[in-house]
Length: 117
Image (cartoon, rainbow, N blue to C red):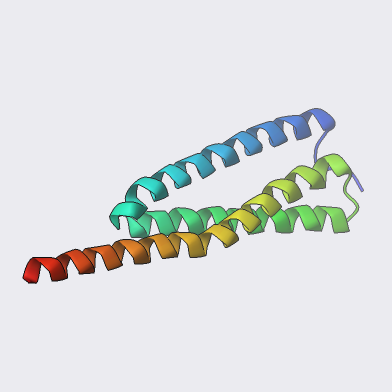
């Protein structure tokens, strides 16, 4: 089977995809940290999480397909690594973010109750 790309292209793909993945994680973490504590931007944060999770699962799937079809290490490894990291992290962090939004909602309700009394 012919490799999907060369060693040099694999280095570029790994560098660009890894950097973009890190930047996406930083943006999502920043937005979730700022807006989550305030209970705002829930749709945006959940949409960013969904995009990152779907992208991670897709990358992992393509990487595993490449491994199963006999592609060399330089082809399947960057895809599987980035996809695996995204899938794992965003699967673990989704309940954490839900908890942050639940706490913000509880604080809002408690403050509303205090205002009424």
